[in-house]
Image (tube, rainbow, N blue to C red):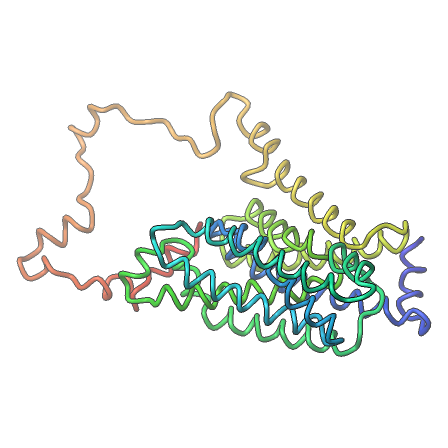
Length: 341
């Protein structure tokens, strides 16, 4: 199928589900791309997988009551995220163990609930693997509104999220409420996962959260650029994946994930600074990029280096021995230092 024919199908009134599927796929991919940057920075991919399974009980209840699957999954996912954040405060048990307990527990509860509904097998397959048909108009508005709320929260708490993702203990010493920031971040991840279940499915939704952000991480070392590239990669993968799925009659969720994975592999090979092949092309002599010749140890004796800023502060006067930490970093966080990762 050519691109022109695909665009014609998008405008066909008899195929009204197709533009709705494309809109939901692109919106959820953009939101997951932005949120996934924090997930990749913090190394919390497991929480995304846990949330994807934790929404199952809410979706099962919504299916039995003939309600909105998105709203049902959101309630269950948020509840599970709150429980994980609360139980993870106990340092006796590590966070990944808590996540594993609630992951299997919530998924088992969902299986028990949905098995009591007649004719659940077909709906279970759509939930696990995604479907572009039968998307109601209300879900389109729910996904759009939820996506705007998620992006607004991320914009408002961006600096705090970065600080917590990079160094939790330092953030706590700066006076940030790490516990509540954890809860907000868990809820944001949960909502991003829930709005992606319609098209991508429960099994593959983690890829939409992680893969675009991981590919963007390979392409740039700046957080701001990374958070712009990740949603672009996610939205483009959703569009191309839906086009290929419609053209070759393949599962839409799997096709979108395969396109995103292909982008990641290309970035892993050809990224400007971190690509595998790029590194080989840039160091024919075996020297790593950025390596500089080391000076002779005796050169330091002939030309001693300038004292560090800390030494100059300590030697200037006795009054300058104490410099408040908050005045050095500005509002408690050295944001310029967080710009380059």
